[in-house]
Image (cartoon, rainbow, N blue to C red):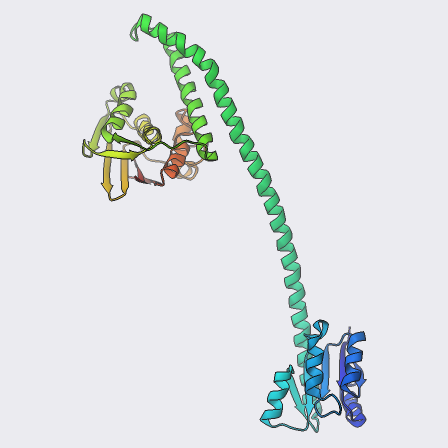
Length: 376
């Protein structure tokens, strides 16, 4: 579509001259002989450019330009002033009134054509960019709305999953309690050494299932913010002793050496239950994956408000695939899955976050170091 140019001049000879110069340049020309006539045309038509004479009776070019740009629909139309005055004051007044350029009389044909084409092209480019920005903004707005909708649906699914986990875990524990009671009584009657193998297998399976249900409930509570945090003061050595005693059979069977590097009087002020579960997950994993007659080192220290613990083992370390999926529950390829501990480090990571801490894993020449730092 040809660009539409409005020529405003009270001198018909000037209008005819401009029309002749622009003829054949691909423009549609409309004319007005006064500022008032120009404003009336602008109410009826859209223009791409206005050539506006400054010296006109009644309404001069400066005032006409201001009135043109005062109308919202015309605010972006470029105005080139036509003037016989090339002094600095006149030029400055033209720019202050809203003009984008000026052409001095008498007109140079090539200059007039070049300036008109340049400003028409600039306006069309600006409009094209604005249209693209508008289109892109609408696309982004639509995508953002779809993303918000998807996030809402994902949150609903996540909430439903957490609720399902919580319900199933509680449902598992209810019949388990009915099984564990009689098993414990039978253990007391027979003694651990005299317990039949099948009974031991049943007892171990029930214990693992009970631990699994407990961990799943804890995961659900931590993920949904329903866990009731309890601040307690306790000795670190008691927690380490409890974990190692619970794993004594495996430690002895593998002939592992447990080295402890911390003060026996070191105490902590945080949630004992979470700290115990965190340490148990990491230490138990190291015990189960360590080589025969290997060594596990537990190093703890306190500095200001922070407590750090590092557990180094000789397990062979974590593969790259395992390290990438360590923080996902039941992630295939992790050592926890192979040892029925598919939620181990995932739960540990949740606990560390609940304790305002950080967890990192580093492979060594012979194994791995799991380091945890928490604010106490």
